[in-house]
Length: 369
Image (cartoon, rainbow, N blue to C red; front, side, top):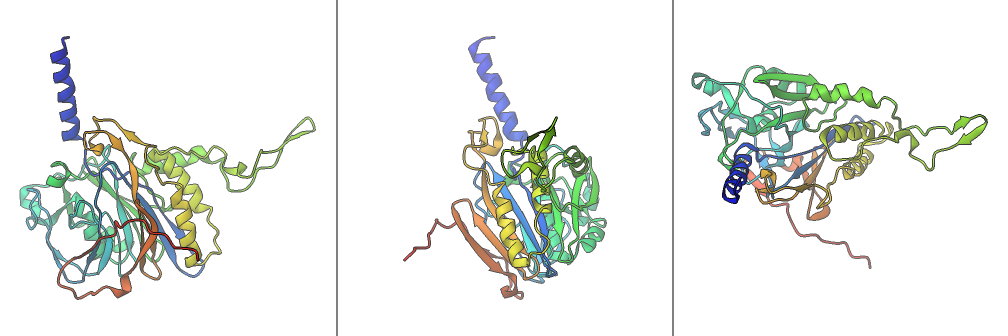
């Protein structure tokens, strides 16, 4: 094989990778914590290999929303009016939510599932009862107050395979996690063209494989516990653990989705049950720190479109904590370790359009006097 032919093959492979690899690469982790005062706290991270340029996006009540139909055009799908006001994070300056909370405390996010997400084959004649996969969270949070309402609502609509120009003309390959102020959790996936909705007793969600496989994997770690292990005694000789933390020895620490799922499961389920909502908010930040990806820990090859086809690193672009009781949505950006807070109770619910807030601000420090 000569050098010119090899160059063509490499270039062709790169082109195919850029065409067929989805752009929406949010390799994320999410969970929910229960407080002792009736509150719940939601947490999630957003990872990506390209700058998402996310903004805080606020949708008022009664805003007319244009559903994207099978032809990829806004307005040819299921159009609806926002029943509830919502605040959350968008991506690439698009009017779609990647994460958010509504005024009733329903909260959730989109997570990448490029290996398993396949949406319904919607005929053009049925386009008006369908929305784009990128719109499913926007639709859920503007339309429903509880997980059960969302479950019933998604059984009545279709999610089509329309493509989005900003995503390299690909269908957004996502699944959705939802939690409500009553503590119910639901995972909504589209697998082999079929809607699959699964109650989520763990509250945890990451990426591929399908959610049922993530649940089935839990049994492989049944030996783990937050409780410290006693010393091992052999013929009268005692061999104690070298330090505290022996109960979770073997907890996976890498960044792959199944490992993050197990880590999030044990860290969130080990949270003290006698903490208030304020205390669980602090707990959530510490758990979320376990999933923060330092620059360089995940390095993308040049063939990976998540890095723009030019290599690069995947980082935790932003981290979210949501106080579902007091309706406060907290944001920590990659470039600023300070936490920004948005109080949903202060939304102008009668505004006439979507409002965007820039949250990617430079790092600041509190001076000690």
